Image (cartoon, rainbow, N blue to C red; front, side):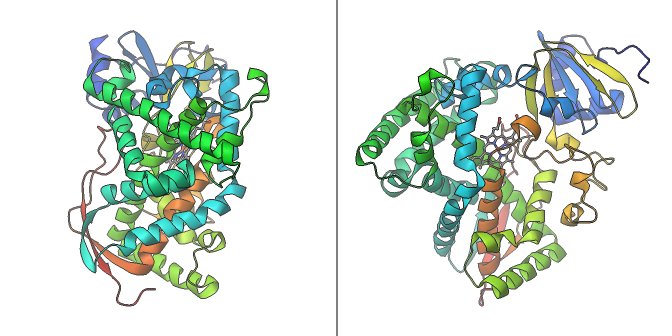
Length: 458
Ligand code: HEM
């Protein structure tokens, strides 16, 4: 009860010091499972000189999501991205500059712009799947990461990249990606070949985008893409109100691509895998496509996509079961208190790394009923289990730093799956895959899927 003195969270360790490391090596999911069983929603794990405090579930994660940057900071825990994103942006700048840069992200991704991007999502998906033969076997993870980098280059990096330098830029991004290893989180500047290739690729991307940006500035022909939004963005409270430099624009583009690429392609994969696995849900999704076609015709407009509620719930349910970002991190800059569902209050000291987990929280039975079942209708009225308590569904994070690209991602994934449902039928060849918890952004382990073109498209 509130009259009891508040204490630090219970410390979860076997052998002190080494204990924590061993638990991390076994994987964060196992660690959270063991810690939760032993101590409940709040516990601390010492790892080397750091203390990680876990806040699991909506009862205890409110402060994590709502606190401002002076209380809960992202900079220290996400700083390893600096060599990838580049100097002068996001986690390499003080919070005043970062706040303005986040305003530029928000502006580029706001709803009014999405109407412009939707026809590109649809066009890229249609062109991509038009190249498939009558039937064959594919792996979704591979398929969707190719498709999503195509749409990203169209909507984000712009026409120039998409039309005349797609392969070159995609290869450079691949090198950036391969330079982001679990070890890079601790030692982002470790002199190893993947980091050298990352740094070379990053420098080459700067040169390419500097040319594109200068050409656009000269021609004054505005394009409708995220690159153009950044070119037109201007600081208000810092740097004397100037426009972004070429280097900052490139950094912002790379950050946007990293936020949206694997997360979206993985969620597209799970959406398909879970629907294919559940025949009744698949029939409902196909039936919905027929109804939407009857109402809107074959055109996949923003309005048509917004009418696909069944498909959207499938996507949300896939994201609930298999969130690609399994852990979200902050550093506590000031102590704060949390009270568990059992009424115990803990004070988390300043300096702790604070973690919450979509992957773990989404499977708590007091938050989602029968949490391991794929049950998209849990999101529909009157159940709406995601709305029972704030921060129940955190696949897109939430609060102050919730995903700015969620609507962009939802529309992109719905465009892809709408095109696929209308044109193809699928079957899993391999058993339903496990998540690969060893990668930075967690997706399905390889899984072969058989596709067959419909004789009569929906
Ligand atoms: C933040 C998930 C797609 C841009 C986040 C966060 C999550 C997330 C969990 C919060 C991170 C934290 O609290 O530490 C996802 C998922 C996606 C997706 C699952 C796809 C299914 C995208 C796309 C974009 C994007 C497509 C951009 C085009 C951002 C940005 C932030 C963010 C800019 C930072 C917001 C902030 O820190 O204030 N995303 N995301 N995301 N996401 Fe996404």
